[in-house]
Each structure stands twice: as structure tokens, then as C-alpha cells.
Amino acid sequence: MSKKFDKVFHKKFGQRVRFLRKERGMTQEQLSFEIDADNSYIANIENAHRDIPLSRIRMIAKALNVEPYELLKF
Amino acid sequence: MSKKFDKVFHKKFGQRVRFLRKERGMTQEQLSFEIDADNSYIANIENAHRDIPLSRIRMIAKALNVEPYELLKF
Image: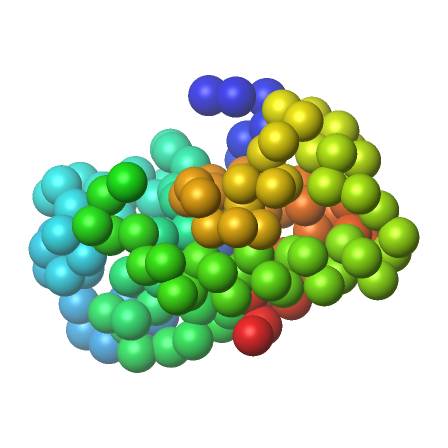
């Protein structure tokens, strides 16, 4: 992972996704499916194991029915 | 570019970056340098020619002295 990857920041992002996902009663696999990603994609995002492109942030926001900026409010 | 890439959404993001960058009197090259990227990186982002990872969104926000979520408020 690039040195540009800030684990603390990405962990906060992952926690935010996890919180909203659980609030909607979705599993990690269901949300991954909704955004047309591999089964383990959301697990990896929530645990800050990988970076995520803006295109995927937009898709996650859509699947969770929030505005994209709300995913970065933590 | 993947079909997941939403040109309209990414253009709005690019316009937001451009607005804040100009407000601070920075050139595209200066902002690219600040985030340790290629000379043309910010030009490509502002013109929605490429996707951008969350790690870079965080770095741009830091360089522009705003919270990351403010870059997605458009």
C-alpha cells in the first residue's frame, strides 16, 4: 500500500460505512453485491485493508441512500 | 475507464477542486506538487479524465485546508 494511504483516516471511513450498512440491516456481502464488487470488497473497505476510488464511494452512497459527502463525515 | 465511472459526478468533483484551488491562488501544478503527484494529476482530476482514490482526496483536502467531506459537497 502506498505511503499516501492513511490507515487512521481509512479506518474512520470504514467504520462509517459499517455503521450505515448495519443501520440498513445489510450484510457486507449484500452491499458488495449492490455495488457490483467482489464478495469481500466491503469487508476489506470496512477494515481499511484497501484504498477506494471515488466511483465506488458514489456507488456505496447510492446503495445506502445517502449523499456521497455523508460517507466522509466522521 | 470502468462503467462505474460517472462522468457527471466526477465533473462536479473536479469543478469543486478547481473552485477551491483558485480561491487559494494555486495553480494545478502547485496543487499536484503539494499532494506528491505528477504535474498533470490535478488537471486530469478537474477535467474528470480519471478516477481518484480516497487517499488522494484526503491529501487534496489537506492541501486546500478543508475537511475531506467538503470536497464532495456540490
